[in-house]
Image (cartoon, one colour):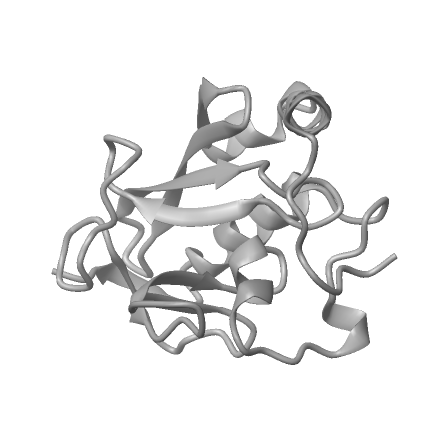
Length: 172
């Protein structure tokens, strides 16, 4: 069933499913071959380093903290962070990727006007929980669907945004 409104998941169940899905993905060997690194922060959060490849072939690493607060009825929460796993980088930072052209299906905002409060970061695509917390209207075919999508889809989409087709280098 596609996600309509977000409700916090039972933490123990969410943590177990999140870990199972991450372990299943890592056990395929694909993340290692792609240079992805994973560090579990706690049962509900993991930090994933994804390489971003410039058209010149240079590689930069970006860090995403994924959370299972709503998982898996909804996608994981997604935050672009500095290597410490907590700090949200400013747009003009070596930890904030410059994308050009910007993918039509992806937005990365250092500051976004949230309907529920002050401006803050938004990693904006249908495979992140925050997308559903903001004023977006996805097509039915784009909506997260429990049982069909997993955290793997979120990570593959992030990696696509960091591919040479879109990635130009660090923002600062």
